[in-house]
Structures are given as structure tokens and as C-alpha cells.
Length: 220
Image: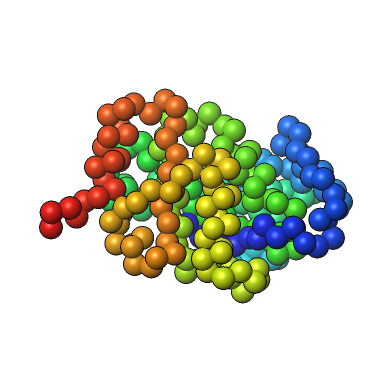
């Protein structure tokens, strides 16, 4: 997972109670719409906030969102202010070379990014709430692999471990829980985390298969 946002409550909006109704979040600067899953055509008709550049330039990031939306399991949710994308969350199938790709029920919660200009409005929280309100999540085992080298530590002032705690609280709010694993990509650094949410419609056999995948190196 690639992440670039902050849950800092300081700033010009810290005295305003934010409320979201029917996907619309009212802030001191206007209404932000939480939308998705979005089609590539819809994404192409919007503009990208210039601050969405943590992973690649905004124009290329917009192209990446369009590509993800066209994938068989790809889903893109956006935070839109007027005609501008100010944040996004993506879902996609796991990388074909990872152990998680061996499970047909697994869907990966991928990149989460919010423009620095909007990081005092809890956009990431409300965007995740909107995404996880959709029924597709109940048909999947949602995983997110929180790699510390993707974290935007420069702009939030948190230590690495405090940032990890902030992320786990955020993802816990939509039902993900931390799980132990011997996946070498995750065990490479103690701050890396695997988090999982089992959808209500996932059969027990699929959950058991997931449990088997978490530790593949036992006895080696």
C-alpha cells in the first residue's frame, strides 16, 4: 500500500464539526463529494489537485487511476471538490508475484493519497468509510499491506512507529485488523503491517485457505 495523508486535526478547520451525508462532506471551504467506484471516463473528465504527487506527477497519477478502474477487480474511489480530485483510494487484485494472488477471494486495498492542502479535513477517513459502505467488500477478503517506505513522514511530523499506530487506527475504523505473517515483504521491517477484513459472504473454506497463506515458511 502507498499512503500519503495526515490525520492531524490542527489547522483552519479544527473547530468545525465535519459531517458527511449521502457521500457529501461539508467543510469550511465547501462540499467535498466522496464518489466511487469511478469509471475511467469519469476520472478523465476531472482535474487532479497539484498536491497529488507523492508517488508520481499528478497527470501520470490520473492515468494510473484510470488504468486501475479498467482492471477486472479494480475500483477507484475519489474525494472531489468541484471538478478536482483531491484524494483517492484504490482496490485491485494482489500483485501476481505475491503469495496473496493465489487466493481468489483476496482484494487489496492499494494506494491512499490526499492532497496536503486538504489533510486537516479527515478526507482519508471519510473516503474509506464511503468505500467500505459498498457491498462488494462483503464478497472479498480485503487486505492492506502497510509498507513503511511509502509513508509521507516528511509532511506530518510523526515518528515512524507513531505513524504506524495512526494508520492502524484509521484502517481499524473500517474493520481491518492486524494479522501476523511470515511474508518476507512484510517482515523486512518491524513497522510494516498486514491488515485484513473478512467479508460477510466469504465462505469458511476461503478463510481457512487465507490462514494457510499467512505462514508458508513453517517447518522450513
